Image (cartoon, rainbow, N blue to C red; front, top):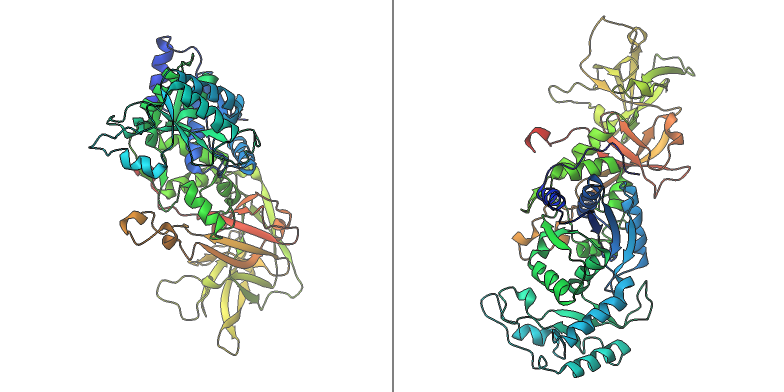
Length: 558
């Protein structure tokens, strides 16, 4: 699926490590993995990890596994499993192996038993709060649990009884016995198993104890023979525990963890917990709402996998956290669509314009390029008659200086058609403009070579007789300011943009009547739009704004 001629990943510190490892014979075949927890939908940050893992492996003729870290049945669901698989495929990647952490539960249990037998793990009766009180701080060592000295035999018996379901949730845990005075708090006897009487999407009710991520993840990597375990920076402090688990569980394969900076975007929430809250509380139209940073939301909005992959490559891989402007992502969808998207005209806030000197009942078909930047796309025909729709914003009865669109007495060009001059304004009983009348000059037809005079304004339009009704969904950022931690009284919900969605009803050209879900177009002067797959029906076209035509982003200054 992935383009065989894609550019190689640019140089970065992880790639340099791989080159060195292959050169020194440390590894023979590169094996990476993308290991999401199926507790939500993937977002653009996950896309960065997907592109990094899959493309690095491919560049060195290696392999990449898709693995679901499904160790917490309370939060996970098969819905998320299926959505993740769909997103990875849509982004253009095929995994070499499909695995679940739950496939290894028996192996993990046996490795935990090994730790107990070695005196490296113990069953603890302290609650999470009680242990927190003795854990210590960054400057003070912790104190040992009173249950830390249990015998191997007692720990083995209690752990087996935990598995059999004899204890309630939270009543006992299995802890690694490491070092309560370690300067790295992660190493102060972390929990590696907890009790959870919950149905699991993959193993059903077979288990009531589940391994913690920090215990399961290194074992999964070792079992699968992962050579380079790539994760984000928040796991850097967990690397000593990762290495400890591999060593003390006596795994034959020894993977190595490498951390890189996660993706942060302006005006964007990237926390799955917060995204789930937005969905569950009805702030958005599901996980695939076009305002969401989820892969499914970006897909529904109209982003292409090519644009997302290019964006992920170009932002690079670094060790330091930073925030990327959302306009940078928009830059790449414009670049991807400018030669692909057909040009057309759509009126989102219609105002009827009647050409009083145009013959009644006459319709002529005007020629226009489908995409002036790509001649190979050919031509389209546009109907033109006495009545058309223009944008309300393209007419003002009392315009300010340097307003070059329609106003009484002024002349403009209709895109692909003729010059028209405003002669009359029709209003309702409240004084609102409902219709404008114009005359046209038949000598000024577009493409005729007319040079008699010039006009300063060109406006778009849709023929009223053949117009196809359409709904337009215009988007602004969902979050006005993503620095909610600046004000302790505010949560991210307080920063939701009340104007993030505007729904308008207007008209499009008749050739749009056959548009299908995910078809993409550039509407003259408005921007790039995608046919919404969720709300479009045979009789009701819905267009999502992908990106405006103008960008505030300067690629030279990135």
